[in-house]
Amino acid sequence: MKYHIIPVTAFGQNCSLIWCKHTQQAALVDPGGDAEKSKLKWLGVV
Image 1 (cartoon, rainbow, N blue to C red):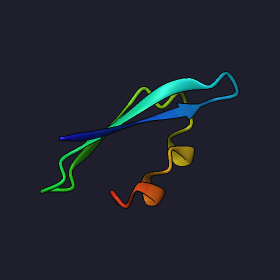
Image 2: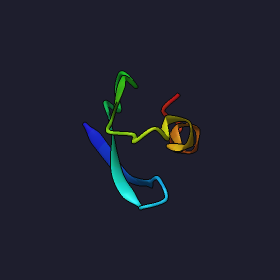
Image 3: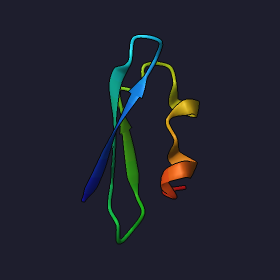
Image 4: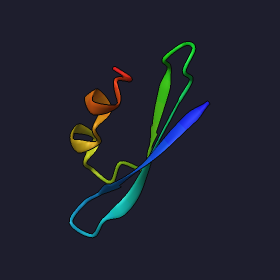
């Protein structure tokens, strides 16, 4: 398992992206309404 903490919202709250490097399955935890801005494409997970 791998993870990346991403600051989201105007307040810089933390969102966590957790994924399996073998299956590429992922979970986005507490995106705070900014799921589109969570940098999933940047991380190459999707």
